[in-house]
Length: 401
Image 1 (cartoon, rainbow, N blue to C red):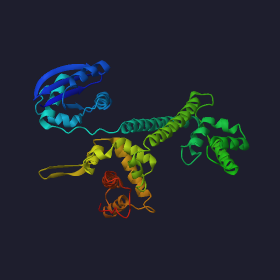
Image 2: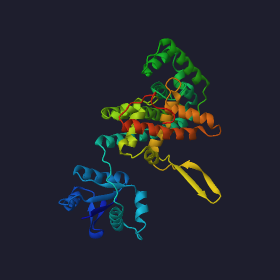
Image 3: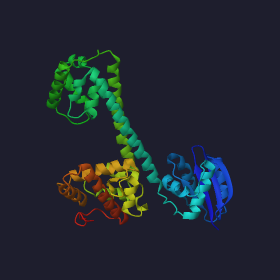
Image 4: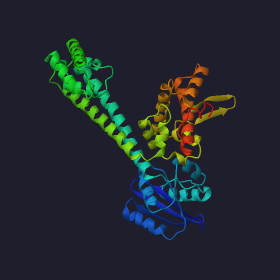
């Protein structure tokens, strides 16, 4: 007997429709809490292999997914776009109650396969990685604000080091947000403070050079505000915020590394030249268990680098990637390709050779397009290695893989 539970997920509640042999048997609404799940459990208990389907709704579908996994029920978590395509053929009106019925009818007609259930570690990695990305975005905003305030208080200090990043730079900005604070001190005192500000080993000679450089910057500065103004206090606060956020980023990566230590794919990914631990854990966190994909092209579609072709009559649009899917995974893979290419001089790989060959044969194609093409090659390599539990062997993998 064909029994289907269609569940329409919303923020605080779920609409449930039960179909038996494609006929509506029962409809009800439950809250997203323990009593609500107990009602659903009572309906499911005693049934033999009921089919359960609901749309993937980000964080709002996490609760129902966790409930079903805890109780050992198989389920189908369908992509909303795929659901809409199949449901529109028989759905003329749309509301939460009808959506639950429509989902159940789509399941009865198309018999979707149950969703691959990953180990809990992948969900935890995903949550940590999204926190890492949020910290990255917060740092970018804080740095932009810090730059704006420094233009008022002490713009020349941005030339103190080659990059406006790192613990030394942030400590110096917090201690000397205004040039007058630098000019109050002698070279020896400044050098001592610089030595204390850096977590790295630095010689006294280097600290004296930096102290003189800082003093020269301060001497040539013509700030727009006085030492006692709000802009100076804002510089101190924002530099401290950037430093705190950067520390949290490093702690997040350390935690991801620790909880993924037993995942074989982390070690496999690191065997590819140019992929380090941070790239490996972030990539696994975004892609999840790669074994669930049927083929490498499914990974391309998941991250949105599958190609779109449009032709109508004599008009044919140039191919371009779909850009629909996991944006973070796409960004991580793009940077991974650039890292692989950068180490190719000493550690060539099939991905770097593919990239170089494309670049040589396509003079008018932008580097970004070539990198995206190499991302597809990298996905194929990753898929093969993890599916077969193999480490990367440069002698085995060729550009034609």
